[in-house]
Length: 463
Image (cartoon, rainbow, N blue to C red):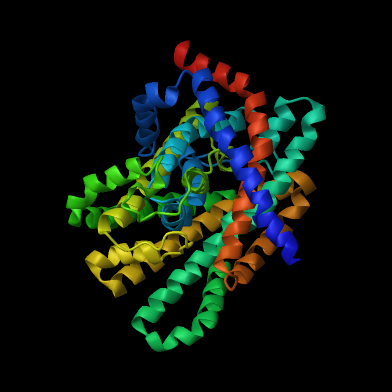
């Protein structure tokens, strides 16, 4: 069993990320940028007006659908989470300061990749037996490609359903219980020996809360995320910004370290010595994908439920989503850590201790621990909701509506189990599953890129 786990999280992980996801995300992003005439750059101002402006317009969704805002906040719920806090910390610790540069580069390509995913998802979506809109890469393959490619949709759905237990469940819960345990110990050091009990109790509480929302269906999920996500993001940005401003003299040096270490990881005075350039690139790309999911295809599942008439209208929310998630929130986390001047144990995978230490330079250890615990609780809780929806839709695609409740029950059970698992095992499994599920998604993106390009031309250049 151990040999299989080592192969799965080692060799297979390397193949999936280094030899498949990395070239597909960069080359594929460039290819889609050319096909769509670089709209993530040339139409960026229009996209921001179109998306942010629509967020302030109240709208009621039709039956079996959610509003465009609820669709994007549900997708953001799945992306704005531990990937922004813990994932960014891991990118720096394992890939050096330069990993942030590759995280940004991947985000620029990720904008057009997610735009394409969402646009195709709306174009090829369909109604399920309950009258709900359903879509995503599996439906794009089913309704956009010939019958002989139907197996590819099942492959994506199967891998995604399994991945939801890792990236959208285990890794999220693990980060929550870790931060809660650290916060409690910071106030009561004598409870250090009770961390296992604290973790299990926290996992049970989270499982109960997730089940209350999950079993309420897509509309309840949309309602919760619509209210939770904006509040979470604004609060986190304000706190990280206060740390950055407090250490304002380190802002320019921080950017200098990021760019100088992007191609020479050892450039930061030897601080990141021992980190190879390959690791810098891979960890930047990995954590960008973990943060915004561009290339994984999962966010398109949430967007497919939007009450919108134009695929491009909703596709633009995909661009906004990557920008808000990675360019804004991940950058705030990275600058907060680097500007604070805290010591980083390079080569060791951290949980929430780096961002906690950065906050502690301004607010003190106890307040910092408590804020990180609350932030991770809210972020991870929203992510659990979003990924539970993804997994449910994938299980429904494979086995039909009868599988919905069974999958949801399993998802809630994994929340409890993951609360007492090792952080390294959880994150390594999540990483491998992420890389694997991207393979069928990229195949469908390349095969259907002409459809998305035509929709884009008709909207922007023939309107």
